[in-house]
Amino acid sequence: MVDDPDETVICDPPLCGDCGTDLSGVPVASTTRRQVTDVIVPPPPRVTEYLIFTRVCPCCATAQTGPVPAGVPARAQYGPGVLARAAELLCGHYLPVARATGLMASMLGVAVSTGFMAGVRARAARLLEISFLPRVRELLRKVGVLHVDETPARADGALGYVHVAATEFLTAMHTGGRSKADIDAGQVLPGYTGTIVRDGYAGYVHLIDAHHAWCGAHLIRDLAAFHRADPDAQMWAAAMANTLTDAHHRAGAARAAGHDTLDPEVLLGIRRRYRGALYAGISDNRDRAGPLARDAHTLARRFRDHEDMILRFVVDLAVPWTNNQAERDVRPVKIQQRTSGGCWRTLAGLADFAVVASYLSTATKWGLGSYDVLTQLFTAGAWLPPAAAPC
Image (tube, rainbow, N blue to C red; front, side, top):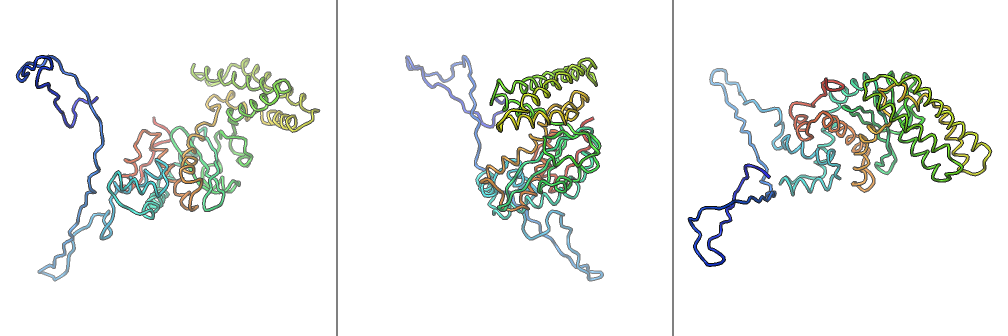
């Protein structure tokens, strides 16, 4: 309930319901408050007209025209508030262009076309490519731990991918295929020397300047699937999952206690359990027939070959156990795809969405509102994160 309602309606009994006595002038014995919060019909858009006067100098006969604000280049245009709402509906609330166009009319009283809406998204992306994306890429290249991921996205009848590089306070997405060149096109990962937290996709192996950490959540899901399929034959999978989960809890406790590393004896114990589980997986499945045993053998060898990457989170406590950060930051792409019938109409629209969504994601991480930073984008220019993280 609010302390200063816009309207107050008095509900006063005029007569006594038992004897019919007139109650006007009788002191109020008690007051009970009830409130209804409702919306009003949107007012018509506010139109500002600029009358541009031209005067002829009586001394030199030259014509002088009054100065026009920078945001009024044409005879008729929409202001930054309309542009910000349009971009917010498309890239902040993940609505298809047609539905967002309808909402502009019904909720804001602004009748625009679907072409206008798509044009606003493209205009926002071009503005962000000037200053925001270079700034975020610069900051991401300097952080110690970087989360990366990719997700498929259909556009114009073809399958593409949206790539993300992110931290707790920064997000940069770009589109392309799934090759090394497409991964590098984001201009963040080439030459990066920190730690990359990722899934098991082999497309990142060319990034040899960086340390790599394998997402523990992905591994746990793989292990659980094998153990469920054959609990008796795949006991090693449960042992490995328990080892990783226990290591995660120990790393979290050490981090919470302010430690930079685990106790050497604890780390040694984790490695022993880890190797015992993986070698059991290799030996138990080496001579078994069938696709399950073959795939389990492959998974166990993966744990053997990538031990350093999988256990990075217990060696360096600055490295998280999962890649949840990147998965959360790329999720809007999946939401937008579902609401848009499973695909984007054009590849350009997908690319523009990725750029604007990066801006809104980063601003949200810094506690800023989407409408505010979009309004700034269309007036003074893009908001820029002041640092890789708050001081």
